[in-house]
Length: 219
Image (cartoon, rainbow, N blue to C red):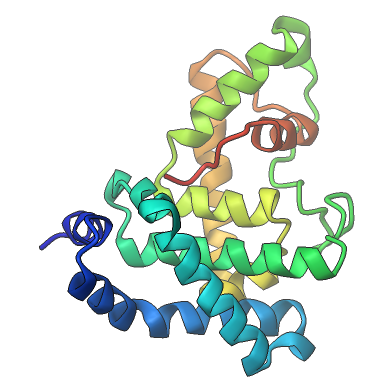
């Protein structure tokens, strides 16, 4: 049974399948809740908070006839585990946002850059050749053409405001792997936008392209 088929069986309301789902993914969800809490605010990484978030995530997935779980489509080879990881990380960060103000996108991260400064290009020629909305749409097309892992990265780094060091800890990979992925994403976006006949937009345009969209980068 594929991940998508398994998810659909859960959404069909089959109690024994849901029990298998909870058993299979409980450890993963618990682990990532702890990882985010411990990285962002270690004082909150206690079992009481973890348990509360853990229960809330499973309620989120199953409420309203499994509405949230039904949004999983396995697009671009996204596994159910990867999708649940993203749901868990997003929900846990939102939990922290409710009890503590979010760091500004303009605040510098560990690398000396603000969370929004993924793309560095001083050119303003794009602004002279396209209307603002055209720029946003063109860049967003390039972003959504990226693979699922690269869109996860952008979700963390720009939309969620995680530093490169925080992404390393959250995803449990090396800092070298994170730096390499950032460089690869920049290269892909630069090539994509070049194929559209423009220079890669400035940092502000990059942030607006992601933040002004009402839907997520992640399927």
